[in-house]
Amino acid sequence: MKNLKILDILLILFFLALGSFLTFKSFSKKGSIVKVKAGENQYEYSAKKDGIYKVQGSLGITTFEIKEGKVRIIDSPCPNKTCVNQGWHSPLVCLPNNVIISLEEEGDFDAISE
Image (cartoon, rainbow, N blue to C red; front, side, top):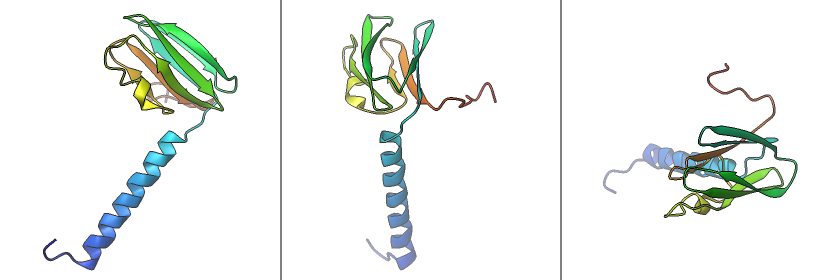
């Protein structure tokens, strides 16, 4: 850390704080609608109704849980299970099984509809 100035330290601390805030915000995101795209099919679920749901993807069935306005994948037939390890997060993506799960507020617009 040669020639590190006070402004450099402040900038580093600012970006660390910003990164921590954005990471925490994405993990604590809650919504009212869970949108699922599984292959060519699209589904909508209420995020206000807790439950465990299943959708058919390219490789098999992906099981996800909605609880307290949050969503996570709890099982999938993909080989590496990266989607299961994402936890309570949005969007959730299982590329091998071609399943995308997103949590949105009712009335949110996507980039196409805006």
